[in-house]
Amino acid sequence: MIRRQFLKLATLTGATGVASFGAIEALRTDSASSAVDPKDIKTVTWRVRGFTCVTCAVGLETLLRREKGVIAADATYPQGMVTIQYHPGIVNEAALRSTIAELGFTADSAKS
Image 1: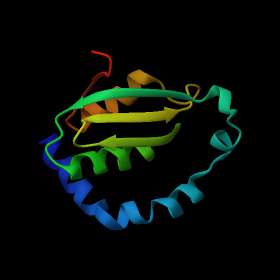
Image 2: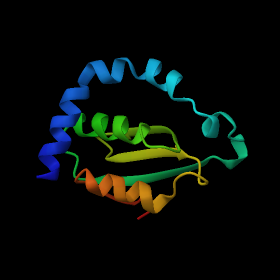
Image 3: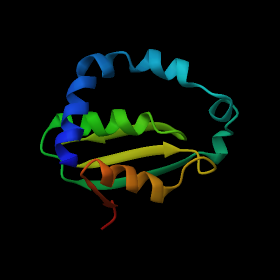
């Protein structure tokens, strides 16, 4: 059920959502993210299980970028990886993993 909801949302955002991301990102700068010191930004890379196509990766990337505190997200289908830059004062790794799980995927350490 969650997987179908994710795929429907990913389809709705589709190429239009990804193409207009730059415009959305420019509008998204709130006071918390504009005052972020680059030293405070953390980056995490996880192996993602559950991708069945490139749309899964693009959808996950798009939805993660919309999360408050996420600065950047890059997901790849062939490698099954996601790299997220985030502000730990706004969002933590547990919340990011929870978001990924709600979308029907599993995120594990890339080193395993």
